[in-house]
Image (tube, rainbow, N blue to C red):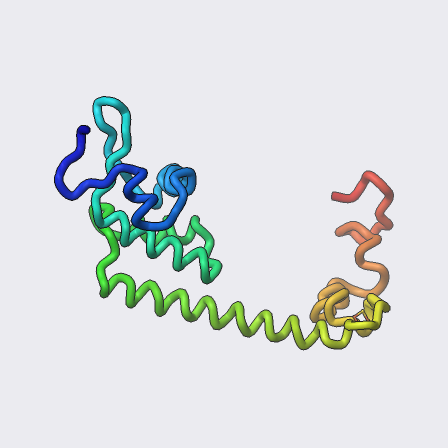
Length: 159
Ligand code: FES
């Protein structure tokens, strides 16, 4: 078997990380992890790829988009695996993002409480049907039924 010391096959990486081989292939297509190819076109991963996969899984659990994870990993010089210090900075950044999401969800939950069992979907008083009354800022009248020039919208003419 063509394998260097400290390398893992894709099966070994899957076993050690608990991530399916298909998911590891997906991560690689997204440039989240890298491998070298053997003469037989088999993937070989450095052992520290396990740390990258752990970071990716944590990011997924807290809802960080993979594109954002890839962008952060791309900032690491030489495509290296995040160090403890890197992870400290990344996790602080993601905590701020999580705090914002939690606040947004709490606001949604509070707005939703008024809707439970209501069913009115009123644009005047339902905070979810017309959040923050954004249509009012566009002017008077049925804003969903006029185009940007204020002309009535006809079926097929509005984008
Ligand atoms: S559905 Fe009535 S207040 Fe939201």
